[in-house]
Length: 296
Image (cartoon, rainbow, N blue to C red; front, side, top):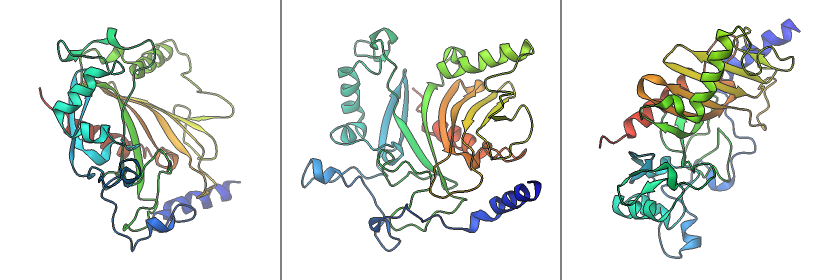
């Protein structure tokens, strides 16, 4: 068993040079096709009308915080007519005023939680490639892979992967009240009481607080240095099977900036042994969101 584990760990180490094309490269994504610049489904909904270019600056508002980023980062894609509203701040503000799902108060232009119906607040979702940090050029609503082939692009390798996320708490004071942050508050209380955190010590799971991660079992990542707190649930990813889609998903809380994100990325980029691979995608997501923030 030890020899088998060693061999698989070595295999994982050399996989960055191997292409991932099996089952994920339909003809329209061939390398000799033009790079996709906009959502092609717009033609089906509004004949003769072009979709918004992925590179066009777009707006996003969440709990009173404004963001501006390339339109292509919003993924799953935003179909018409909302795609065009997002690239014009006045039109987007009118849309916010007409919906109760975001808590935008037309009278004040500020966030009003009381306006949101008794259901979970709607979160726009975003995605980007690591390590390039560029938008994903396929709609994740229909293509959930974290290493999808894209038209006009080299086939992805194990060095290339998608990070998907939404913003749970957007740089506002009081981030400890966020849903995602509350999970860390509970975990801190358990640890202070000398008790295990969620799934720690469970027979069918591995946990970073219990030791190295083998990759053969579902596993939990928990890290908290009093500024960056990370709690992710991850699928097993060894033995490697290119047809599966194992993922790490969970909350990230940067206390110093009052930012809470929910992130997802391939579980082979979570942790192997003591190697905290998750730090690269987590810090990239934080950096991107920080760069999108508008000072109002």
